[in-house]
Image (cartoon, rainbow, N blue to C red; front, side, top):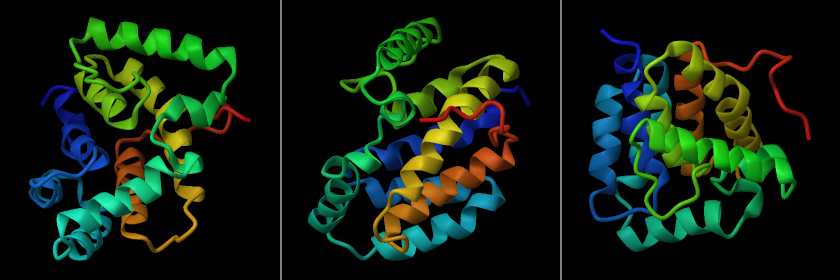
Length: 181
């Protein structure tokens, strides 16, 4: 199995961090079937919460959690750099990596969580992928998760499942790699 195949969970989780559509629950079921065992408990809880919700309620929950709450926005560079010029440099570098690996960013910024997950899955080298995940993705996910006002909210379970995948893949940030505010 290639290194990038070991990161296929990134492609399974990416759609779960995008605005919900009619196929959202199916995306969750698909991710649950293909994610590492360490993430399955959280994804199972998440599925149990969202499976019976009407699409409008899912959309409302997503908007409340990620769009209307800047502390939980899904743009990881914002959590790491704020509005500093360093974020601009980070965005430029990520955009170059997206192009290099042929990852479609869609209409979002290159540091939007689903785009970063798709990039991580596409990266061919484990060293490069590990650096991106440990230095940038894992600390941002941790910060987003810690900012949830309601820690038991279903979307918090989704973030917990992503964190579990990062740990399972060996992408926990080393203390010296974590960026401080």
